[in-house]
Length: 223
Image (cartoon, rainbow, N blue to C red):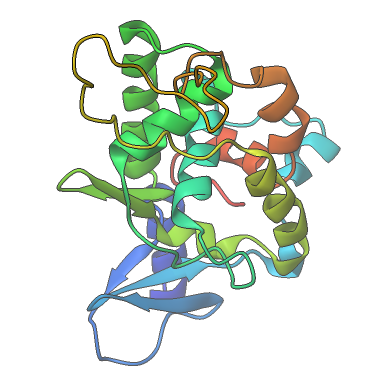
């Protein structure tokens, strides 16, 4: 087996391949990515083929545990990390994990411990498959996101504009007897008092396309 075939086999099993920073080049058919002193070789399927091709040929993809939660968490991370929508999604910017969880909770309209644990589990799965990276309470988009085609960016921009923003930090408690009021003296509704938009309205059709491909997960996932 030659070096190129071996590299593709490793990438199919393990995802984007780590490379030596500062040393140019990547295996044939792969693009070299660099960020913060790190480098990867990202496979690019021929002719822009994605896991959507599996559906066309009626071939089952790789099952993913709680695939719906995984897509929603990936969408929440995209909202928090892709701040300049005029640029490409990758490399994006780091964002606090709590901001991602806040967006996710607004998407589903729930903030209980069970759904939070589901979201954290989805976050781990996305990090294991190189869709995301997490360290020191921060998350950022992983190298696999760079495989999203420019044609998919319009749909992803529209998705990000529709998703809720992270909840602002909690304000310091007011003195007893005092309460927030608007300019006309009416009480102001506390942030997050009402449930966020339903998941069907935001994370359903809008998460299609590129984010739907995240369901395949694992080493063979492409978006």
